[in-house]
Image (cartoon, rainbow, N blue to C red; front, side, top):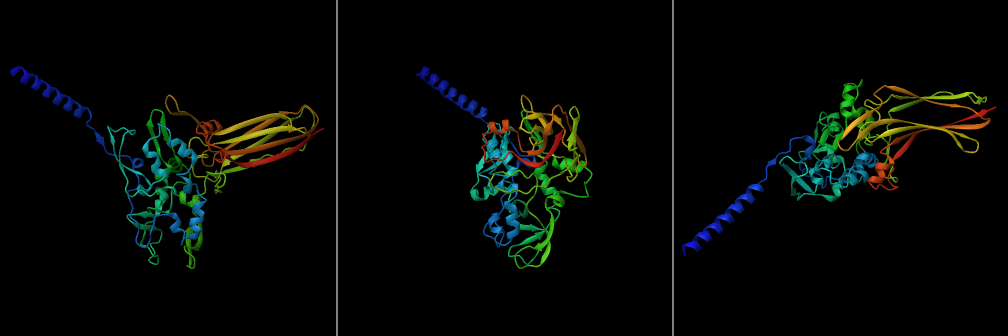
Length: 397
């Protein structure tokens, strides 16, 4: 009897020990979110006088603003095919969505902390206020204009059907930079390198011009149909000009100015054909290109004879070069600083008589074809736009 009791006691003790060990090993050390880009804009109630936070409802009154926003890349920040491809990768951390759908209302889960501070172990809870239609609008009107359940505007008008408070400081470049200056090494192979804000602060226009000055052109117009004209701003958020879909028009704000040299129309055999093209970052207060480190310009010179055969071809590149594996690091950066100019030279020794044509083409590229193929981006996702395209005809006698 005593032996049975001892055996029973040993078994119970073993079970308790296993349970305590399991509980200890599974105890979660949850650390809070500390960085601004780890957090979404907290849940926003619909301001009084409205029935939705959607841009579409805003557009019922603010028609021009809504039409302009539809042509912006902000409107496609969530549906962007490249972004969606990146999200599907195992290496994609949770916080990337916070710039593409900033409102907690747009997010399916609420992140409350990180297990052991690990970005790949976020503590999630289902968002009972998740609005899938709102999610599809990406960066919409409410992303910038709704906080604490009221509309934030530049005047704080009392005439609107919704409560509006004036806060020009909030609507300044500080709001833009909260997303357009995200710089962090997330993991050894994952870095966020969007430095437009820092580039502007280090440039010649700091405190003279800001994001709003250039990317939201001022205009005198009625805020709603029938109202008096007053100072407003265009909401295209003109930028790279590379549309997210080939069926969508996007407004471009080009920082580059082009200064091509003149080319003689007649050459003799053994003459050297020389063409110079000066590019200047004349219009941007930040580097060109800026933002996504995969963006670049290609400057291509191609000389052909009358039969269409290529006699000489040369391509120059402006942009960053990155290594992503085994560690993420920038290898090179020849982006143009504000007001910086650079001259590209094409030369060719003419060796035969006939008619020649020199083509000079500059493309602004979102990413290269290899990256597009890797992300399985199809033909309806434009990889580049052409910003300069000139042909020069010469005769060799």
